[in-house]
Length: 128
Image (tube, rainbow, N blue to C red; front, side, top):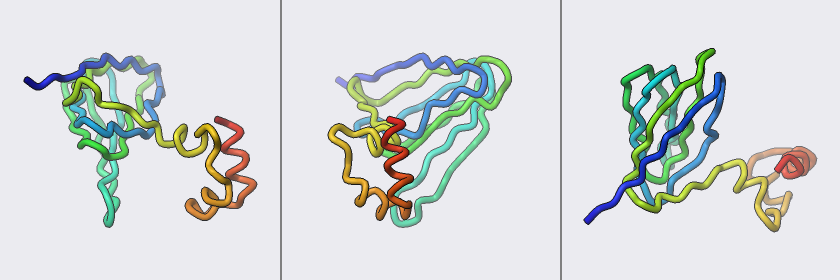
């Protein structure tokens, strides 16, 4: 027997579900109200960005384990339902995991990985 998870997601005007992954599930999102800009990035080596504007009634698939997001580009509330192909899909928010880990990732590692000045990394880590 396969189980799924279902989530109702309410978006304020210009609200964002930030870049994240579900390590154990594919997500299918159906827009009930409003307009969402959605997208995901394919895996290495091409890291291609796939994006689309969704309106009421539109459906979009986010493949398992890929970084994706949803952004309400409208001036009104938006509502969507997400079906996930696991009862335990997991979620890893990219910025939180990278800059807000406990204990923090060494700033030298992040500076080199993201080609940033270490002071920028320190600033970002303080935000989380």
